[in-house]
Length: 488
Image (tube, rainbow, N blue to C red):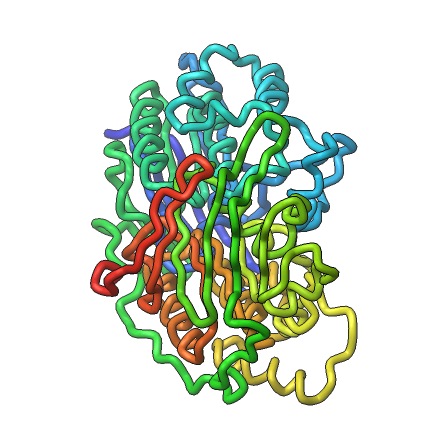
């Protein structure tokens, strides 16, 4: 008879009077490694937090640690995104602070964070070096935590977890923000730690998994159901409704030249992040921006968004005007709709769905003024178009991730912007959600809107993309027109 490692009996959880987990039972035997997948909002993350001791629920959860093992007898839950604090212990950062903080040392460096973690857990620092090397993270030792992109934050989470090697390791969305090479290397590292005795529960819907994963489950109607493997979480087609009339109209372009960069360079001290970038984006073009983690994508986008203070020191034109010719950051943002992982992190957690969408008119992270009737009507139309009517008065932060992204997409296009910037907008979404999201992007961009889309995988992109720019170590490696067949 197999020995039980995790035993869960009669687990119940309600959220806002709605049952999420119902008399859930799940047994994980010693040596088994699982993937927990399925639809967004089914309760996967809640279950993981309960197992990790981070969330209360009624029922019985027992973990039978092996106290003869050299591995720590503990459960580590790695959240889908990394929450960190500044040197004063404050966590409420604002979006642009990532770039303005380059001059001030407001957060720990990666090296200092790892030193602190190693001391707290009694770990030897020489054991972390191979992990840093495998994940391509060795060069970030001097970077402040606030400077890191979403993929780099995920790597820091993973480095800590793989260094600690707890007996039970639960990772929520392990591949978020990682490029193809980093995903493969992570799978190799996960296989290695399981050989040493770590047991895994991965929360994701990804197809390319470590070899050690042999068991698959979904949460269906509040209970864990074992499945053979993951295909698509849902086979039904998402039928798009009638697009609101105000979004059928072409955006009003201030200039046919959306972005023009001439020999742009960005450096932080001795570290050069962008090198001699030359790039032009014309009105109506649909671009794919790609590059490995740390290639400079986020910094490049920060110049386009108007967020980066070094833009004034470069020959950069946005919407026909040279940067620094008198326009404010808010003047620039009037032309742009933006989704990025970092923006999602820092968004107002107290805003409702309706308020979140409405805030897109004013480029704020919450709604701080009354909308006129016309604008209120447009918000209502988008709420209906995105299928969010029953959620409109709920907190954005209380929704499943898939619906949160739809709310942010609605917010992003509410003013029918000239330029839509979608920086890895499908991070953490399952295959069906990603397909639906990109169908919406194709539909919304059919009015002539300009698009810059960041994504690692050609199979998970909108079909409207026409051109690609590839960065490598801060330099433009490729600029090309794409055959639409490549993206299908």
